[in-house]
Image (cartoon, rainbow, N blue to C red; front, side):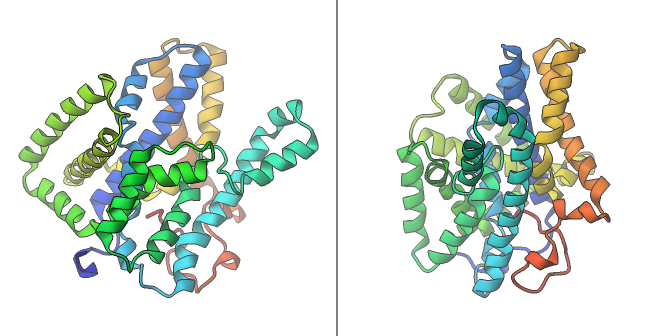
Amino acid sequence: MAQQAEIPGGRVAWVDYAKGFCIVFVVMMHSTLGVGYAAGHEGFLHYVVEFARPFRMPDFFMISGLFLPLVIDRPWRTYLDRKVAHFAYFYILWMTIQFAVKAPALIADNSPAEIARLYLLSFIDPFGTLWFIYLLPIFFVVIRLTCGLPPLAVWLAGAALQTAQIDTGWMVPDAFATYFVYIYTGYVLAPRIFRLAEAAQRWPWLAGGCLLLWGLLEGMVVFGGYSKLPLVSLALALFGACAVIAAAALMAKSDLFRPLRYCGRHSIVIYLAFFLPMAATRILMLKSGLIADVGIMSAVVTAAGVIGSLALFWAVRGTPLRFLFERPEAFWLSPKPRLALQPAE
């Protein structure tokens, strides 16, 4: 593996753009599928969601592993604080919030004992949309424990798990098997990924041509019905992640897409809170009948999920409610760093 010195520290513009791209597509997926299910038919955004499905979450995990080489050798207490306790705090907090929001519907069909069981079950089986931040600490600990092993052997084991398409019905082992190879790829190939982004910025026309070719091939495989085949899904995810990185590197050359970068800088904020404005807007759109087209409705709900979660973040900054997005000092295992809000990297 390349030396850590080759990996830049601090904020890197194209990384924020890539994270922004990923989080917007995550919100779009939940919004579009939710609207389509409620409306009883699909819209044009369903095709976008399907196109992005092979690489949407793999890219998010790959980006999450990029800066891990910079912290992998920190003392265990510090490492567990930044990479486990940080996400555990937000998972427990927002899992409880989501559960409380859905509680009225659960009360109608379940006894108090069953509701309590479902809540406790959320500690071992991720609840709702929060499974990503549930899995991250597990991945971070496994990578720390295996950092002394040959990287190729670990990567091949991860690839084998992904190819096996394990389906036990329990999200933790299933999602681990599906996505570990991608976060490990980001970790072990971080220097090469940064060089890929640099190359895209150095030769933008070549990068643009490659992206066009990739898009055509991606569409042919996805809409041809081959994207879920073993090995094909792994290849699509890796190439798709590289495409997102190249596109993000190109976007970073201009201020035109600055809002997307802002979303990337606050991706954890959007990920935690988007379900609230998304669900509220979907219900409003469906009941009001203001928009009949499912695709346009899905786009409006997506925008509401992103902007609404950021609006909540802006509203609670500097107030006692800032604990929603900022881990209180009482929940730190080691001295609190200068930055209060740790990005999900």
